[in-house]
Structure formats: C-alpha cells, structure tokens
Image 1 (tube, rainbow, N blue to C red):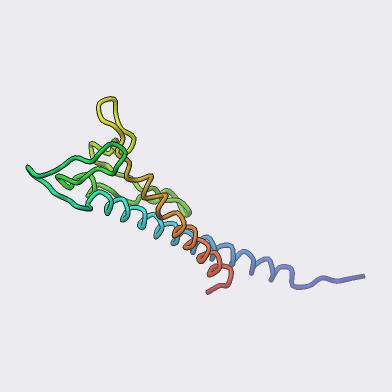
Image 2 (cartoon, rainbow, N blue to C red):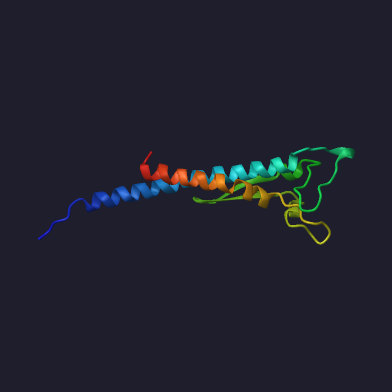
Length: 134
C-alpha cells in the first residue's frame, strides 16, 4: 500500500501563496488605477489656460482645464481587494460621454487605454512576486 505524506503541508503552502498573490495583485491594481488617474489629469491640464484666454477643447479631445474642478475631482476608489475605479465627482464629469447639449470630451477612457499595457505589466509582476513568496 502506498502512503502519501506532506499533503497538509503542501495545501497550507498553496493557500499561503494564493493569499500572497491576491495581496500583491491588489497593490498592483491600486497603482494601475493611480496611473490612469494621473494620465487623465495630465490630459486635462496640458496647456491649461484659465480665465478670459481659456479655449474650450474640440469635441473628441480631453477637456481643457479652466477652473481646475474637473481634474481635482478625479480620484481612485477601491471597490474590493482586487478592484479599483477611477472616478470624478465634478458636476461636469459627464463630459466623458457628452450630453444632449455638449459633445463628448473623453478623458478617462483614453487614459485607461494609454496605461493598459503598464497596468498589465504591474499585475504580471505582482503575480510573480506573490507566487515566489517575495
């Protein structure tokens, strides 16, 4: 009869690695969301001119900052261990999709697309760190 030993120890090790991977990936998700938020802010504040010389952006382009309220309202909100949202609580955050009166001036979707590869790389590195137990 064959006797198998060490199964409990191996299961504990796997459980520990899974927990380490989740922790590392959670950190990476938060960093990735911060990268997207920073990119969105940068797209809004590039060539920032407020006051009488302010020039509104063209439809389809990120909004040009005027008062600073839109980009100052961009924040990262953690939605769980492995989830984060980049949001804006500014009253005119709907510029992302436009309204019946104003054409869309997206700033979050382009920022997400621009930082997607960086985010994936961060998460891949996090999985490797977690699996290695670093």
